[in-house]
Length: 122
Image (spheres, rainbow, N blue to C red):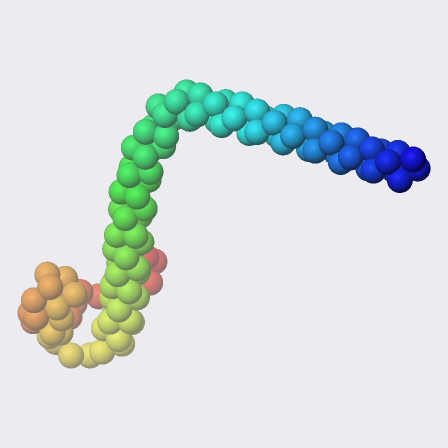
């Protein structure tokens, strides 16, 4: 008799735990489904923002490329100014009548030194 009662209680506990697990899993499944539906709805609502972000991303990329080009040109200009300052410093101390330079027009030419001298005021 006690053994039957023990088996009955054991079976009742097992059935109850199975039922609880089934209910819990059902709720979790329903919850996951609801989350998936809400996520899909938000993705649909955010689609224009994603397309705008892609367009702006392309524009940002263009601006970054332009910035790199401008930085490179600025660096080249700084180097050219530095080279020109060095040449002017040498030119101001020379006594030669003519000076050969390619800094003014980009091609080597001979100039009268007096015309190229820069006063110290600058």
